[in-house]
Amino acid sequence: LAVLDVCRDLRVEATLLKGFSVGDRLYPAGHMRPMGDLDVLVPAGDEHKVAEGLLTCGFERIPYPDTPGQHHGAPLRHVRRRTLVELHTALFPASAPVHGAAIFIPAHLHAHKQVSSYHGRNAGHLTDEVQLAYIAASWFNDMSKYKFHPSFLVSFFDAVLLLTAHGSTL
Image (cartoon, rainbow, N blue to C red):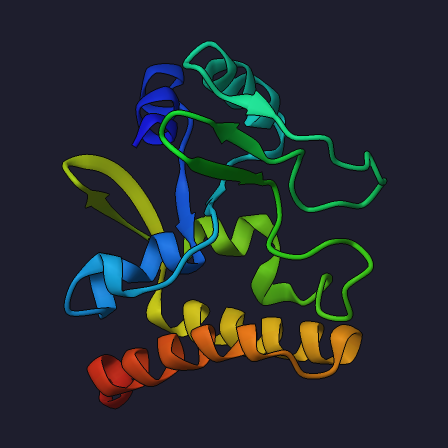
């Protein structure tokens, strides 16, 4: 929740991604959705000030290669809370086959996000249609790079629950 508090204080719009976005909305209980980290999309010009705000809240940067075209900065870890946060400025790295797709450019994402809340804090999330496209594009991206890995099954359950809950309105 610290990341949402920092974004609120800095007046930065935060959009929850992946498990952080769907856990409370699609699963019977948020903790049922496995997550290794919390992924948050912030405007590209605001990523550094949000990271600095988290550093003042007890987070630390994990060593991470500074490679041009990355879609998120170095992960931030809060040791006591055992929380890992990735601040995304895009959904995919520039090298991903789906990176330039119009549906994933920041202006489109901003226009198609929904404002909601997460444990009483304002937060955005992708619309159901964009969420489903993001899941499918992530599979395409990951499978073209890594082939198949059991970790891909988590987002499979996200897609099944999304389609079960909202398939008739997509």
